[in-house]
Length: 309
Image 1: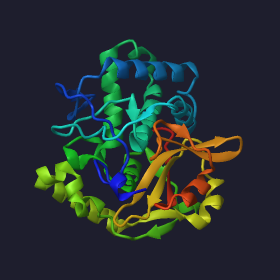
Image 2: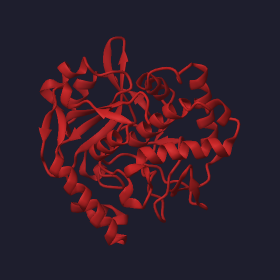
Image 3: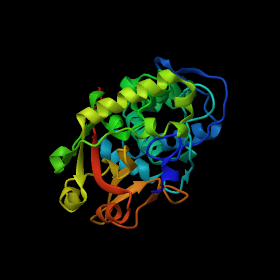
Image 4: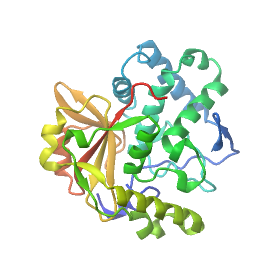
């Protein structure tokens, strides 16, 4: 992955869509979260996928299996950069029409959790209530501690996303038990490339908060499955596990994300590719893909928790 592609709204260089600006309102049950009104097209996609999931009993399936099935329904969806960084203050972005590798994972997880809500079917008949519930779920996934409190509260580094998700009971980091080794390299990409992040230049307090988060991530290190252990670890990876390909770039933890998908006995990656124009299933097995891409050197694996509290 080139440096030019890595630089931008998110430290892993993933694609994010510029969402249309508009009035903001409270998102879900969290008074700290803000979201623009949904576009009708986004509501239509959400409603269709949620109804499909309920019709296929995915509310009773293991979360990972539900995520794998829901993720497949996004194949062909456009890969579009910079969705989470429209002009103005930080707000919750809802966009199903264009996704990057992280917003794809986040929305599939949020959809899988939404359809497990006891009143999901009834909610789909009340658009405002359904939108509010989904916003609350997505806010919980995307922001530190589940609260949107400005730009720095977004989980910009994916190793932070995993760690915070584990604290919130959303995922379990299973990397170490799969043969991971501890990576203690410094995480500092955002603050050493401040010119690439508009918000860090506009708000010194955001820059300080991101620097503090980097310090915490560096201090605790990250468990990573190295290239040499990928085949052995692959056997323990399940459908719908969240895959984070680690980065070789100085100061950067993760280069790419997606979902594990077993196809005819072969482990593949369901993802919004760094190079390409739509969500797809990788043509090559996941271990081979990691070894082929020069900017990636291992994996982190986060498993969705069956019953998030």
